[in-house]
Amino acid sequence: MKKILIIFSIVTFFVSCKETKTKKAAEVKNQQVDSTANQVIEVAAFKGQQVTGVTLTDAGRIFVNFPRWRKGVDNSVVEITNTTVQKSYPDENWNSWEIGQPVVANKFVGVQSVIAFENQLYVLDTRSQLFENVLDAPRLFVFDLTTDKLVKTYVLDKNSYHPDSYINDLRIDKKTQKIYLTDSGNSGIVIIDIKSGRSRRVLDNHKSTAAEQGFLTFGGKKWKNTIHSDGIALDTVNDRLYFHALTGYSLYSIATNMLNSEDEKSMEKSVRFEAKTAAPDGMLFDDNGNLYFADLENNKIQYRKPDGSIHTLVEGDMIKWADTFSIYNNYLYFTNSRINEVTADISNLTFTLNKTKLAK
Image (cartoon, rainbow, N blue to C red; front, side):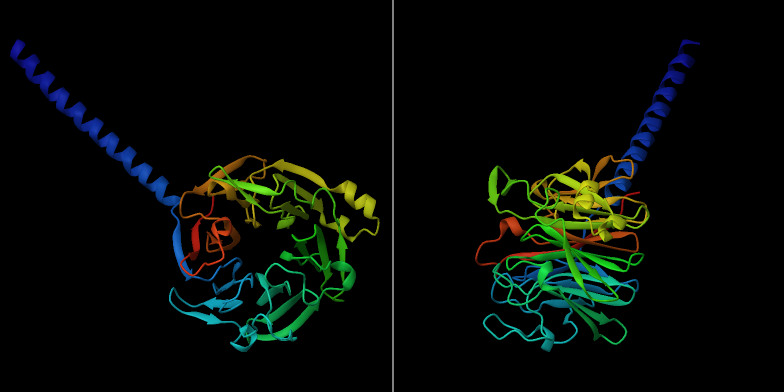
């Protein structure tokens, strides 16, 4: 009997060990699945060319842009057809302007953002070079993505921008037939009427559009710069426009119907403080109401759920100043513009376009 009990104990021990091993293997497998869900995948790389904006069309065409912050910019706008082919968009002539040349109507000067919307590509030209005052009125070029031809140019009215304006990013509101743009050089929001083409400026030097400080901190070192209203995102479900200064930690919003008000004071009073967040650059909503933005100082991409809670999507060395976002096929695409790392010479720096899965 004693012998039988000993054999039974040995068998039970080995069965227990096997079950424990199987359980641990399952846990490891689950952890691997969780970790790959937030994997960052490189889509394209640009050596010596500092990328900022990215947009994807409904058909999956990819466009990126490169601002003219220094000499040696090869293209203002390119279409990425695969990881090795980057084609001047819409052609080489549009991208051929160089610093010091006369400014002409149909050549890009300083492109900061690109947005694909309903089979059209909107190209935001700051008309600024080398972080200097505008050379002429900032404008928005609109190209038909079927023909790749220019179909409309919105030129900002004189009262809607300042000499030191840097029109930074935009969102298109189909319901109100308006285009909203941020000004990070001189705080404020510009509104373009799609039908008339006229533009007006609102929340000019308002607390909600102004920078809160003149620096960000990276690895204990201050990156000194004052950047006003920058990130902008449109909540099409609740009809609210969200915006954020880059050197600041406050997220604000306003109802889009208030942006039509002629009463500036009422408009200003209707601005709502939403939350304290990390210092971001671009921002974007997904279809589930999650607002994506970067934590620039800590190499993260975060998102704010509709309930107001803030979560980290991805973090690490593959996030280096996540500048601009676009969504396609359940992936969040983002550019790494590495702005805080840049010195005078960027010829040996590589800037990337990456993607990662959206939040579940």
